[in-house]
Length: 134
Image (cartoon, rainbow, N blue to C red; front, side):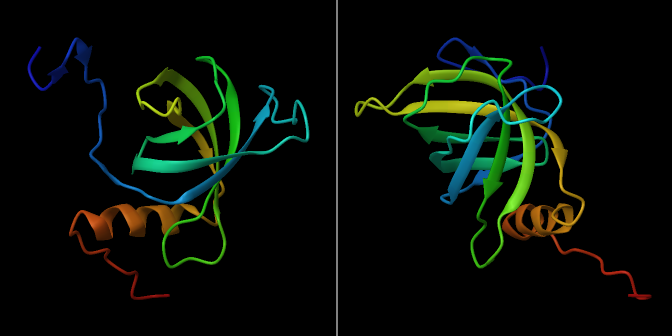
């Protein structure tokens, strides 16, 4: 189909551009109502991020459909961006046994939406128009 990319048998389904992200990510597994399944937190390193999702590498194997509570520490920020997401895919690509995971965003903390938009747009070379009334 037009607009889709094929890479070694993989059909690209993303609707939005992604940018590189080498940031620390902390996540926990939650149920569909947002309650933590356990208090255990896992750590990951971001690979890329866009308006609708992200790709990270970790030691934790995750099944598609798993719901995550994510905290992403964007470069030059002191507070992490909080996002709830759903695992879309997970696979071992690295020779070191690390597991790559693709997550689609479900909800983003309203206070962090602007931080994420500014980061993505800024790295795509786009200016953010500021509301003159603020």
